[in-house]
Length: 556
Image (cartoon, rainbow, N blue to C red):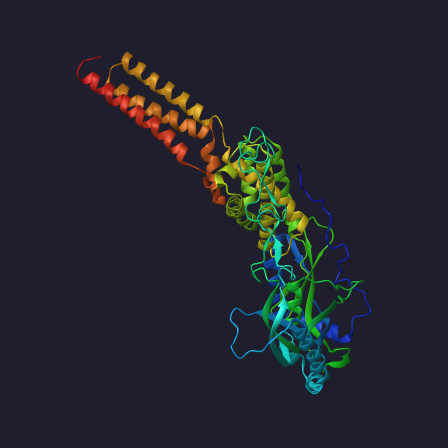
């Protein structure tokens, strides 16, 4: 069950920036690097990288950061404009009195004729293209998220119903077009059923077994009266090509996450004007720019290959994040796997595991989210299938439906916790490692409820023995001092049971660092221990008080 990841560096192609002999580095880059050394900006950069490593759980004393090197990210941004006619139909519930309603052929002819006419009106299109030729990057980038409308026409007419495609009937949504439903009385078994008479199914009452019902959009007519609008407009699709050529690295980086793309584009500078050319039914404009980037090698103790950190812009936002947490959490992953393999009653092993997990803020935060996700997903599944949350989480039913629901709940829970761990780690963790770790965390949390299954029996036996011994001791030596000694004796037994015998108090003090809840129970639950201890002490005091009264009035 061990999910430990093989201890090999993720950045095998990471360049050694300090010892780079790449002749491609320009004199301008070398001058920038010399100017950057020991500057306030370099100090800020080193602090940023150190803070990142610290948040990932790597001690600052275990890392060494190389001198930074400056380079530029190459960016090509293209805006691809397409000009087209499109039609939209709006079903009219009320028809204006002065409206001329076209027939289906007439409305189709109106659509075809005017679409061609609108596309022939190229004056507006040509003016818009000239505007694009002289537009700056900022102007085009602002326009790219909009739809520019040149002209529009509308008419009212009859059209085939798009819901039923003119057939006036649609598939029955209750039986999914089958015309039959599983018998609700016998759940499809058909055994001795007086409803389906052994068939296992009943006829759908909505469609009367036909599998179809009247279309509610056209009310069974097969056609609707619509307002058709013909719009001639232009829409834009932005295409981004980014390349990072780090000095000392043989192959450039060309694949980026959406977050990295936004960061690089935000810090990019497009100095030259764009180059544009017309295409069939469109226009394309391309801009070339650069974004300032900084790279450092981070050497971590016990890891041979360095990690390269790339930061972009003056705010030093990290991009192309290395999977440093895979190595930072390697020890915790092994301890967690060993704990799951051992017995669920091994308190010492669980205490060791909880201590290691609670020291990593990312892991503690992820563990606390498990309960919330499980309850939310269980609530959703319970509502969809008409069952209670308790029956889904706690029932021991072994039917096929219950197994299927629990399996789906576990899959959804694993996906949610994995995404939460990746978010908490801010991307410095690989998806495979996060999934394996999340699977073990989900399996580990229920073990925290199983401290000692025989706790109740132990407390019952100790309490009964203590009370019988006290009564026998007071009966043999009927003195007030005997009652006082008995109270002290019961207190010692209570403390010994809590600390020495079950070890629960020590375990609770460790687990409380995680501040967990699981399946609507607080972990750790100190109430049971407090109640058992109180029963023993209160019962002992009552016995001593009754013994003192019997001694006072000479009954013993």
